[in-house]
Length: 273
Image (cartoon, rainbow, N blue to C red; front, side, top):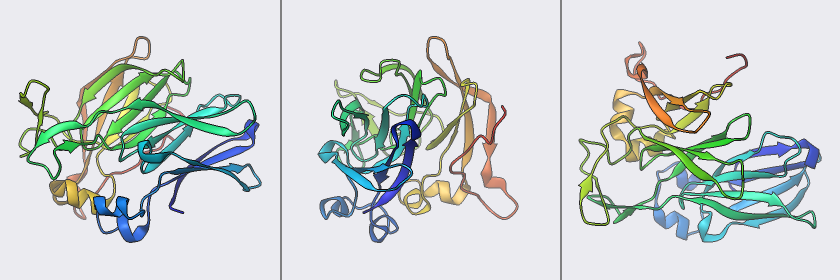
């Protein structure tokens, strides 16, 4: 049920797929009640590859609600990977055990922000897209609601280390009625444009980000995005020590297209750089 993304590791003859939700739910906009009603996923499915036989189903439980993007490490000998769980904002690591079965554990957890003037008193990060650098050293992901992009060193896949973070928007950006609160009661907002989908250049030095997720959800959470169109940013990456910085000289506005505002979504490098 609720098939979404998949990734396979041929040397382990395994493909793992994730689960978003029932179209009757997500096409109408996000409703927390639909999660309670069981209309969103919480499972990973393990298949033999290339046979396609279902071998195992992993229940991620309440820490793995709405698992979306799925990635194995690029090294074909490795038997580990990650899935971004959007609603619970956890990065879950899946891996093969000694007996040949597959298991999982939470590797990264994004804490919800305490907020004012929103539908809930706490706002999840809502991890939407993530990727792993070709050398398997860094993992990057975007928090669609919070508005930050993060970079983690995953040379030890069990213990990711945050080495870079940049705020590029979200629901708490300046001009929004929503404000975030610190532990001591102070409020803050970011002052940069929102993002959602990301793509890394082949040399790992440039991270590109667009800000459309799914038109129905865009309209629900970012109504101005639908009216004005989306955009693309470039984030410069420190591939030695880690670190992220917005490139001020790169900005593509899709709102001025001749046929009307466009919604830029996923990006792919076709090869070359």
